[in-house]
Image 1 (cartoon, rainbow, N blue to C red):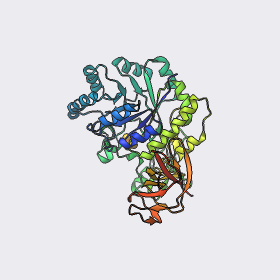
Image 2 (cartoon, helix red, strand yellow):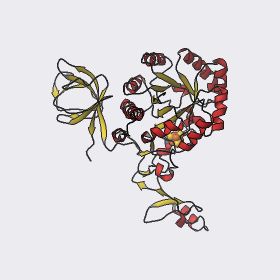
Image 3 (cartoon, rainbow, N blue to C red):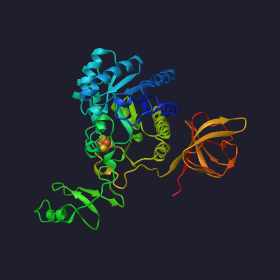
Image 4 (spheres, protein in one colour):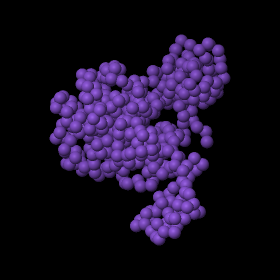
Amino acid sequence: MKKVELLIPAGDFEKLKYAFAFGADAVYAGIPLFSLRTREIGFTSANISKAIEYTHKLGKKIYLVMNIYAHNIKVKPFLNELEKIVKMKPDGIIMVDPGLINIALKKFPNLVIHLSTQANTTNWTSVKFWRDLGIKRIILTRELSLKEITEIHKQVPDIELEAFVHGSICIAYSGRCLISNYLNHRDANQGTCTNSCRWEYKLGYDKSSLLKVENQQKPYSMENYISPPDGFYVKEQKRVNDKFPILEDEYGTYLMNSKDLCSIELIPDLIKAGVMSLKIEGRTKSVYYAAMVSRAYRKAIDNYYNNKKFDPENLKDLMALSSRTYTTGFYTRNPRQYGENFEDGYSASETHKVVGIIRNYNSKNGLAEVEIKNRININDKLEIITPNKKELIKVKEIVNKKDISVKAAHGGAENVFITLENDPGKFAFLRSKIEN
Ligand code: SF4
């Protein structure tokens, strides 16, 4: 049986290496000018070939993202860039623009193109259309249910289906959003989204406009929209039982802030529905994130193929990452207001934070070199987490680069050394529990 692919975001070379070490089968990386993450500057067309070489030496796969909707001015540069990229032999190119796809396939008939989720492919007739054009894989839109995916696979079994299982979600259909462009002149479809949907919107009114609304006839009267003292909510006239709460704290309100997707428990269902690649979102997230999501999903996928039950530890490890709290998205139901986080707009973890990356271990003196991400102190109880192990340790000694013992080390400062009894291996993190 061909195993489902675990596909991890690689925002730069380091993230790529950690993703593979922690269990990814494949990664995707962007060409900044032409992918939807222009903030992600880890790769350029100049250094991407090294990443491709590294990946292929491991026997794994790398897909390159060039999924902008190009304006006229970008057509020529895009095609020039594509020509260079094709020569580097990535395992696939993620594209969306129909015109560019058409030209690319005429120029390079054997090119493996994956259709970006930006194309919002929501039904089997569209899948058929893209397959007939020469697309090899469809990255399904996040707004589909398991039932719909099953139907698509039944109708068009001879095309690869990829589905997002984890990460941030747009409040709009992926790519069909102008909020950032409107508010900040930064276009999400050109790779410069400012996440405006998650900004802190103030709930306010000026008295005159309120009175004007109050004086109107129903259905516009304010009592239909605001219900003190329970707090504010929006109610639509024909859906009297549906209340969409609006909470406000001292910073504002979060009307459009989607929770993050987490479908780790649905892996068996997605595989049975015909999905052959499980994709994680987050090219701009940290190397720790890339490693931890790879680790958790790798273990969950392997458990499935080894006929083992779902291990809640893997979900706990995802809970330990910063998130906007989790939802399973549209796979089993329409999440409606339960898919939104009205309470705050930032990502946070309730349980753990990363404090360092172990860069080296000297077995002669038992000192591990640590890149500090968050403060560590002597006597802190920390956890070492590697692709296959977790181990609790106590920080007995911290030595700085001048060989002087110090009581604490701060995030962003020079690397320090801590004593460890055993070599944790090449890829290891230190994290601490957040005490509530
Ligand atoms: S503003 Fe929000 S919904 Fe719109 S594209 Fe950006 S992340 Fe997505």
